[in-house]
Image 1 (cartoon, rainbow over the protein chains, first blue to last red):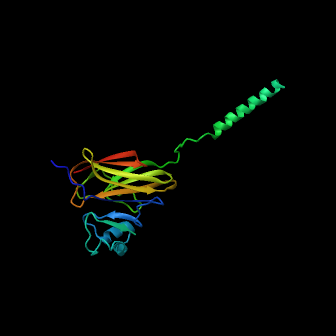
Image 2 (cartoon, rainbow over the protein chains, first blue to last red):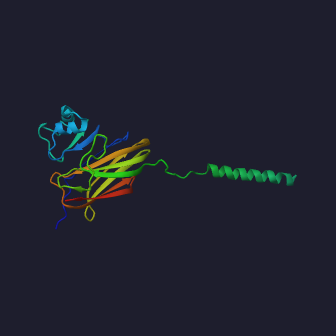
Image 3 (cartoon, rainbow over the protein chains, first blue to last red):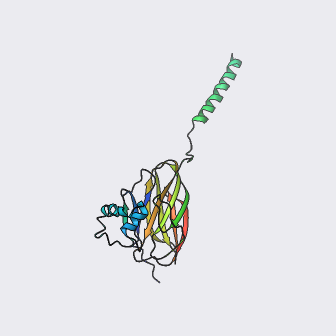
Length: 77
Length: 141
């Protein structure tokens, strides 16, 4: 049985510590099945209307704010 | 005269020895070095970087989060190595942090696989400045 292919694994990190490197200007979030920007905003910021902040911070990876995909790593501003 | 000088010389020698001992090179005690105090695994995070649903059993389409809690201060590189079954490397990542006090610091590392994780046993190794600090086993079913 061939070994599984893990070449498409995506990863990231964030920290509560000051002075971290690898920073992308904030925390990151990996989209899971069933997520929407408003659901993420509700969970992360306590306000679903904040989805636009997430969208604006990720315009390079989100073409349509109604379409995000499991495995996508989003910056949380 | 000689008998008077000897006690003084001896005292000076003792003082010098004490001084040398006191000023000798200090060993790096590492008393405040960054140490891993806890690792939690789970499927999602709260805004304060704590795990909202701790588990060591995941589904194939889950994102997998490891939150590493540390104490100590100073520039430190935290790294994770995620492996599958007999050691096949799944992912490696590192992050340099500079905590400045004794308040606990949480650093999260996460991995995801768009086409799903193969079932089996996995392990994440957490390293501090290149030295293994702790490991956590988990499973995908």
